[in-house]
Image (cartoon, rainbow, N blue to C red; front, side):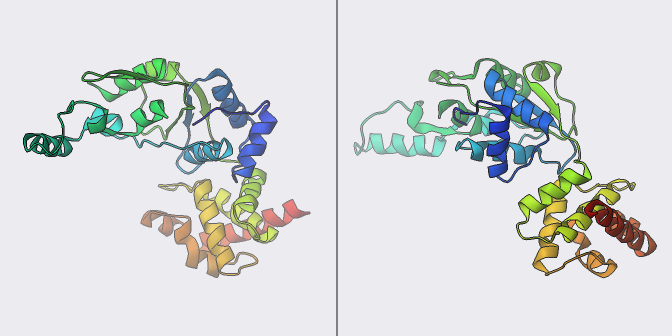
Length: 284
């Protein structure tokens, strides 16, 4: 990401809203401080609460390129930073032997395949490598030398806490936990992300999903699922919820068979009635 021109947290929030992202104040403050202090920000929270969307919205709000790296167990430097283009090197050797091209340093920039982390600072154990990069924002390639960032990129790390991160990594970052939003905030998000949705439907959909989160589900739905569902309901031309349409479209909200079994018949009807009641009370 490039430099930012947000003088205040309010300006940052306005920029994120323009990117159709509605953060609560604590997240806005964490993002602002991350930019102002040039420190990485670690966002944690349940799946679907908007961690990755926050990074996407920040990139859009700053007119910056988003470079994304999906981390997983076993990720190594070759996949995250760089590797050599051996097939191109081999072709060059053959061409040089035939005299069709001049000799060239085989371990030079022209034969380097840039992975996301190397791209980020230019425009062993992986976690240990990441620690070094987040400290100095530079990468050392033995055959070439050290490549340093001309300016510190904005860095957002996200985690669902499926595995514990190293304490040394956490110490290099600011931290913010993103929780599920309040009902009022979730309705605002739905209205922002699903233009033209009827207010009653937005309120009922958000209230229904909030009711689902109170159940003992294998995978409680996040805000992302609320938005997907609201878009599906709007596409069907619905004005409000009823048990029939909820049952027909529940696959936009729940992703596990056992969760479908927990939300059916009387439980589904009760959730719909509660959502309609809560939304109506909020509209008064």
